[in-house]
Amino acid sequence: MTDLPFSCEKSPASGRGGVVVTNHPLGSAAGYEILAAGGNAIDAAVGSLLALCVVEPMMVGIAGGGLAHLRLADGRHLVFDGMAQAPASTHPEIFEPVSDDPPDHMETVGRRSALGPTAVAVPGNLAVWCKMQADHGALPFSDVIAPAIRLAARGFAITPYLSGAIAEAAEDLSRDPVISDLLMPGGTALAAGARLIQGNFADALREIETKGAAALHGGPLGAALADSIATGTDAAGWLTLDDLRRYEVKLRDAITGTYRGYEVVGPPPPASSGVHVAQMLNILEPHDVAGLGFGTADGLHLMAEVIRIGFEDRRAASGDPDFIDVPVQKLISKAYAAQCQARLRDVALPAAVSDGYESRDTTHVTVADAHGNIVSATHTINGIFGARYMVPGTGIIPNNYMMNFDPHPGRALSVAPGKRVPTSMAPMIVLKDGAPAWALGLPGGLRIFPSALQAIVNLIDHRMPLQQAIEAPRIWTEGHDLEIEKPFAPVETALGAKGHTLRRMPHIGGGMNAIAFHPDGLLEGAACWRADGTVAALGGGQARPGIRFWPGRAPDAPDTEPE
Image (tube, rainbow, N blue to C red):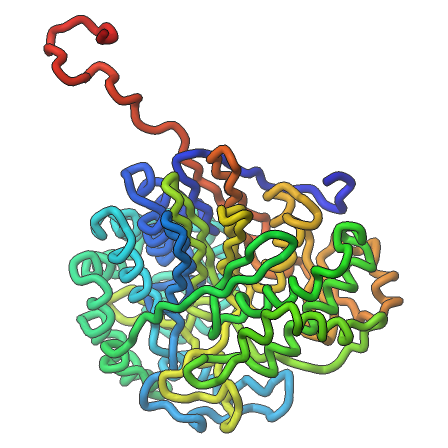
């Protein structure tokens, strides 16, 4: 591609021994260390995620939730659902809504669904990481968790990204003396470059090293979390030790769609991405997307209309499949996409709609090894610093997933015991002729799966190299205002003429991490400018068999090649 309205800010990296891409340099370094020690992609992904709990504590933690999409070397796709769920004692009327109408209909009186013990849902992150590593990893778990323990015990220099997050959440963090003493000593947010040591969390990780997920799901860490819920300073929450004991990781079948000869594989409900990325690609397929060009008014208008339709259908049928019947096969069918063509409009008609709430504060890792194993995984504690308090003596920051439920009874997203809310997480893997072509994902709340869609279109239709495809400017809409990034400014007038009310954003979605799989076995990783994304690529490897120490060689024999 040439003459694009942007230039890349980062560089890709390649290797044949494996690639790790995360949104923090030390997260990528942890995964690289594990690959170099003989671990596979599953080991490296879990090790990276555990390390990110230390160095990205505002985004992810062991008491959060998320999805991991694995493609194993034998070609199987597995989706590990570790999403958080409502505790057993909850019911649809536990919160009082601020308003019945958008945009405040998801807010609750006293911010009880967002802040403190009443905001905490049953977590699944640690359970899903331990299960996938136990089932498919190659190293002892103690080797996988070791980098995280070291980072917590010895500390690390915090990034401007983390420092800014502490400052942003300072007012809420100051309500809890445990977390504020750690992150805001003397009442001032830690500055970039300050060293953050988390001794209590290092001890918690050592407990997990010994007991695995049981340390939280029924063990001493879980007891400490449940006690913090029951004795909250403002109000007690609902999460109990029994909820933690009963939590189950759900293994789900991936959803596969097709687009211009490629297979696009993603997670099923309660994730929206597998269904609606497939649907939106089906709607785009009859159109000459490449001919419209990247960044043109006509091309962006078509993309906006397709995203709008995806969100309309998401609102109509989306949720936990244990509670809601999602018509997956209908939505991903080519026949339904043909019907959707009539819903495309020449002129946009913005409407006041809302698709609920999902936090933008998430992290993502993409990992591949030389054996053919791939992990694309998105995990979070929901809002920035989750429930914005720390469990005393543990260093654990609980999630605030209860804010993703609708506080009104009788709705699809109403609170119900055991319910998992829909998510826009999009850990995607794209195949060509049955072989992996790309794996990618990103944070960003409601903007995740439309951003993943645009990256896939950039790769397939616009034939962009990987780095360009993920750094390219994005758009987003639910059907009201059209958000655009600055490089699209030259076509704002033309988009306005097509009926769009525009909002120029500093960025749309979060830092995308991706890996390209080249036919010669080379793995290429890329991370975009929207986060601290870093690529670690493993090259080289072990010596050629037979070097120096061939069978039968005498210790004092000359170092010459045997006949």
